Picture 1: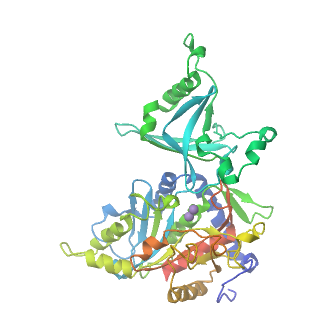
Picture 2: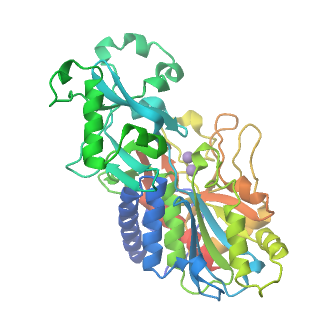
Picture 3: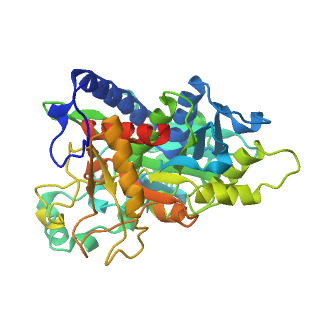
Length: 470
Ligand code: MN
Ligand code: MN
C-alpha cells in the first residue's frame, strides 16, 4: 500500500489511485449508474434503496422490540423518505454518525387537472419543481413516472419512456427561423412556465360516427388510451403524483470514460454513496451509523417528507425507545443523542467549469477529479443562511479522511455575492450537532443531464464509510 497520509488534493487524483482502487472505482461507478437509471423519482429511489438494503439484511424497525449492537434497521415514511441504520456498540443515546442526503431532483410535475387540448393537439399542463433553467427542458425526450391513487386505495404505478419500445413526451420549441422575437428576450423572460405543456397526442378518437368533428376529440382519444391501458379516468389525476423526467439512462461521458452523465445526480449520487457506505461498513461501528434520505430538498426541505419535519428526531426516538427499559422516559436521551451526533450533509456542489470563470471564487470552487468536496459553509451574501461548521470538527474530519486514504478537497459555492445555495445542513445544526456539507462536485447541476467524475463519486463513498466506521 502506498503512502496515503494526508490525501487532501487540489488536483486531478486519478493517477494516484492504486490498481486495486482503480478497479474498485470502476465497479462502484457501474453499480451507481444502474441505481441511478432506476431511481428516477424520489419514490423509485426509495423503493430501490429498500430493495438493496433488505438484500443486505436490513429489516423494518417496527419489527424489533429491542436493539443490540450490529442490528441493521430501516424506517420509511410515505414511500419517499428513508432512514437506515447499523446499531453501534455504544448506546444510540451516545450520539449517531449520520450521512444525510436527498433523493428528490428538479423536474416537471403535472398539474392536478393536467389534460387539455390546444390547436388539435393533446397536452399535459405542468408546474415545474425545483430550480431549473426552463429552456433546458424543451425539445428533449421526457419520460413519465409516478403514481395514480384511486379513492379505494388502488395504486397505479406509471413508468413510460425508458424502455426501448416506450413512447416519450416533449415540450416543443419554436424553430430558429421564427425565433427572432424569442432570442431578443432576456433568458429569464423568454420561457413562460405556463407554455411548458407536454405534448402527449395528435390522433383523434375514432370508432363512433361523427367523432372526428367532435370537440376535444384528440384529448378524448388520450382518455380512451389511459382508460384501456392504465385503468385511469380524467378524475383520477386529482389524486396522482406524476413527474416528467429526462428519458434515457446514465451513460459514460468522454472517450476516457472518466465521467458519468445522468439525470438526478443531485442528490442521488450522494444518497447512493451513503447507502453503499452503510452496507459496506467493515464491522459494527462504535456509534450508530445512520443514512437519512429525504424528499423535498429542492423546494426548501418542507413538508412531512422533507428534512424540516420531525421524521429524523422521531426515528432517533424510535431507536432509543428500543434501548430503554419499558416505561422509562426517552425524551432527554433523544435530545442528548441529537446534540452528541455528527453529520455529513451529503449533497452535491458545483464543480468549476473553465467556460464560466466568472463563477469561480479564485480557486475556492471544487475541481472535477479532486475527490469529494467539503463545503464549510453554504449560504450567500456574507454567509447568510449558512451553518458554518466549526474548525475543530473539520480538523477531526481531516484526521479521519487521512487515516483512510480518502482523496478530498475543500471549496465554496462560487464567488462571494455571485454564488451560494443551501442544503439540509442548517436543519440538523439546530440540534446542536456538528454538521458540514460533503459531496460530489457536478457540472451542469440541475440540468436534465448532470455530469460527475467517477473518481469523485468513489471518493465520496470512501469518505462516508470512513466517517461512519470511525
Ligand atoms: Mn442537492
Ligand atoms: Mn439541488
